[in-house]
Length: 215
Image 1 (spheres, rainbow, N blue to C red):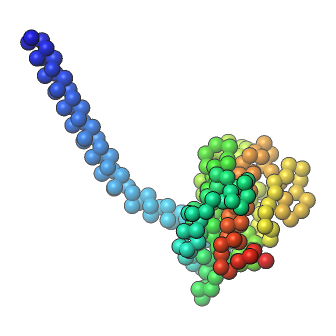
Image 2 (cartoon, rainbow, N blue to C red; image 1 turned 90 degrees about the vertical axis):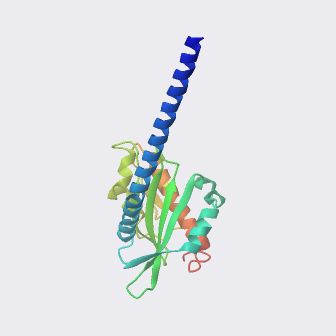
């Protein structure tokens, strides 16, 4: 009888100790999260602002387009093209000149069509319908292959072209809309290209200043 009572007492003590440890650990993690949440968000904003400027160098300031962002949150981009499945528009900002006149948009897009983890990129799109610049915000593709998507040799192929849809080719680009695939990384090449195409389709369809198409 004494052994059973002792065992029961030990179990209760151990359970109580485990509860206290779990409670303290949870509170500590919560405190650390709250402590680091603001700096992390601030760094994220700074990174986005730098990227916005990098892809639309002519602009002086950028202003989030809340109306278009609401539409982006509600739309399934695959409704434009089945090839856009797994792609989402994350953020849209108006690119403005020194007088506050609109020059175009900065469009941030994330695609899950990549070889490994998702790829997030931002590109500038002028009112005339051309790509002003592209910057990869997040990518974890294979070193020496898919990671080459961050290099100018690949990204510069999109710049200053007025096309509704880019097409990846492995035989050498021979027209305005064709993009040379990265050697050994066709999946990554198509993921980036589809992300840009999806962003173009969305902005052409929803923007009040690009209604009915950019041209």
